[in-house]
Image (cartoon, rainbow, N blue to C red; front, top):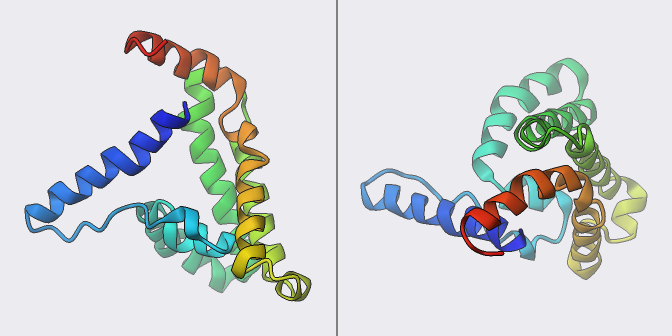
Length: 165
């Protein structure tokens, strides 16, 4: 499963971007070395799926910031991302509902924690501490995003179909 996710996010999407650029379209890669991010802000804001980030920033975050402030806009943006992921992961798997949404709520909470005075003093937004905090926040709850129903109902049959199992 990890291999499939890496092939899709770093292989197929990167090839697609390269193809578009060869045809003269300014299609920058969707991923920008996410494993070197030293904060959740940097990971989600500059390094992971920049197309989704750009769309939600323009059409969700910026308009909501003027109405409810940056903190609530960040949380709404992560809830929105969670719901989108629930639709594309949990609905086809017919289970695990809410897991992806909780995963993204945790990401938003972690991002806000690293921006607090305490988070800045603890170094959660930069350097090796920021990198470690980011990786822990991403990996510890990963089972919420890629839950058992998704693995059993979608990933395993796909791997069987391509002869990988």
